[in-house]
Image 1 (cartoon, rainbow, N blue to C red):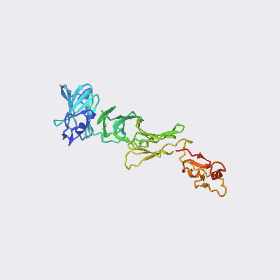
Image 2: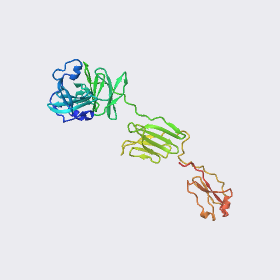
Image 3: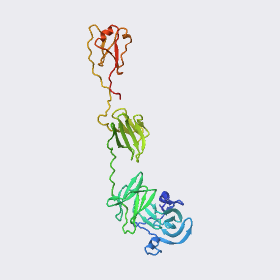
Image 4: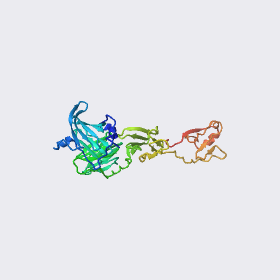
Length: 410
């Protein structure tokens, strides 16, 4: 059982269709002898044909006035038996009330642009000037993006962006620009080709006046877009570099900045280049957006990205390397062992530790309060002059403090 432009029309409210009552089941079968278009009586009169047309096609109706509906100009019987009453509201605004077996089935409202209904492959198009088309088949449901050719040779490319399907005319191998679906269903006209595009990507076409009718034919699949690649590394300061890399989120990017003094910074940006979130040395992770910096205090930091939390692994990208000569030492060099003049025989005031550092421990009154600096604090007690050992033995305790030269701190 089919419905007369039933649920498809009912759900097409956002495509310019206003529903006045639930659709009902239709018992009539679709035409079985191929695609057929039923032109309106107004269109035939424009071609010089009489308004009194064959049964089953558009039929003239006595003009009646209704302020809410407009003026009834004719009644048509569609291929599956649905009755369409066409009302004129003004020159570029017509309405069609649909009935099946006497029951209201919905309303199509063409206000300055055409609208369409789809009953399982039977299409009814109402133009804003009152013209109508009604055909069966010529339909590709749920079509995949690609280049399609219509029965008259017209080529259209079906594309998808942000979950919406769109079409563009292709002439001489060049696209003329996509128009994307705004709503559930829309009608476009390309020359003599009338095309109806559905929200699932399916679309149908009818060639006005064409002897040959056929469903849109897929000519070729679109060439897959190349995978995003990292941009070039740009030096923006004496010891600062920057690079743009793809985000794990579609259409977003990440700008990596590596600075000798400030450390690494990553800025996630939206499609328009507006910052969304920033991570750096002081704030090295944003779990909500799946960003984290590993090794933020080293010269080789890495950015981790992921789209979900939990056990989802990170995608790691190394920050750009600093320019040559800007590398910072990551460890303090070990000083070479010092050479000490042997102390006179019998003097045990000199002690050499295993780390290569020589310290003189005074004896007597000074020795009681003497302290050796802890390893790595950069301070040590050393003898002042070649005779320091004998001076210490005499109780003079003549020592000085000297800061050991250390490598720069990281």
